[in-house]
Length: 530
Image 1: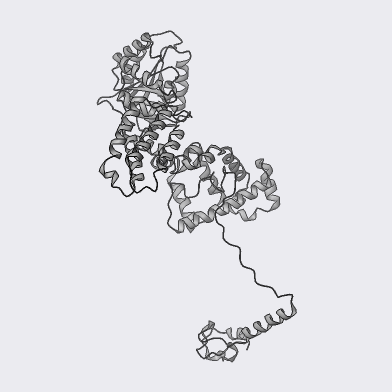
Image 2 (image 1 turned 90 degrees about the horizontal axis):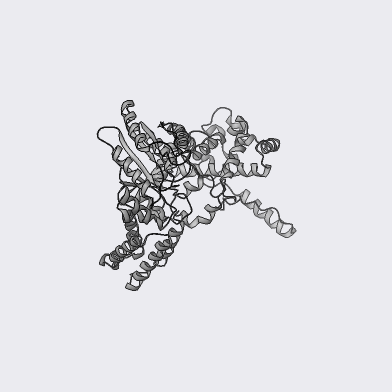
């Protein structure tokens, strides 16, 4: 979403490297570049003005002008201002003192409210709540059916007394849903309302009537992160017509420029609480302004990555893998397969890799990343027998041919997998020996980078040099005779004092020593040519 903005800002900061101090001209040029980058990213003009004014004021302070590393100081200032424009500290949902807590969803047509209702219900269930989804969108065809399907997938109950399709009273449905939640002891009610246009006065009034009927503790405005500059007009219209306490950004995984996320907080004053980052129910996360600012500046988002890993990986299995890698056992292809299957629970590999610091410099490689390669690797390992997974050394030519046919691959691909597996195992053991630590449950390198699946090329890291070969005898008769004389001289020299076998310090060879004078085990004297 923020790839273009991230690249533009990175290029701006790169021009400041090597400067001992920042002049007024440097500051003006940097602020102008930041302004252009934000405008190109569809950030609203009022938000751009506020942001650049704050950066200029702080960049011109004595603290920065006397700094030894002004480039890093500018990055720090921009990072802090991004956090501020995105909402500062992350805010929690407001829950009612006496359940049920009522959360009302509002937004434009096509913003993704119904799907987001299911995601929010699944997230609340993970947090230990008992949510109820209320189908108050009776306007859009099959909206009620869609909510029921999404609710079933999320394992959340749905209150839908009316079938909708243009018939029924959405205000009465919302009111009866709240009463049903009280009777059945649901502690959170999520009310899905019909989508509307910013200029649709009738639908705006319907949303206001639902709000008055259920008195929501939170009114969340679902904003499509891909609508650009129009986000400001839409958000302002909803703030005036219905009012909202928080924002949920949907479609944050799109390829738009993402200006809505940077504009809505400045324009409306309402914080962004959640972000929808994909189509699956699990692609839903709390919005942390500091983490999003780090992503924009290509600093990565390790905290979110670690949180997702802790959810996806089994703690006992991760500890067992770590012990095997550290040398207490043998890391096998079966362990490798289990690790890959757990990695797939985190979602698309490309999305996970984008959270690592500095990955903006590898954007082209990430764009060309082949997710299907991970599935091919999984198929290859699953085509092996348990014995082959436990001991890859027994996989000979005929076995490789069978595995290739079973997985729909070629023998050369099987050879490449086995070679990369041995390299990865060696690398993981060296990391474990040096005390290196990775994410929970991820002791090894991640598939897709370097010589592992998805990258498409073998690792170009330095390999151990081949063993040196012993020099053979020269074909020149004179030179060969010289070599033989040197060899004879070396072998005829007496053993030095204190040489191997600890034979006295007299310089005597082993042949000159009486075995009876040595404290040797019985029968050992036969090895001394006696």
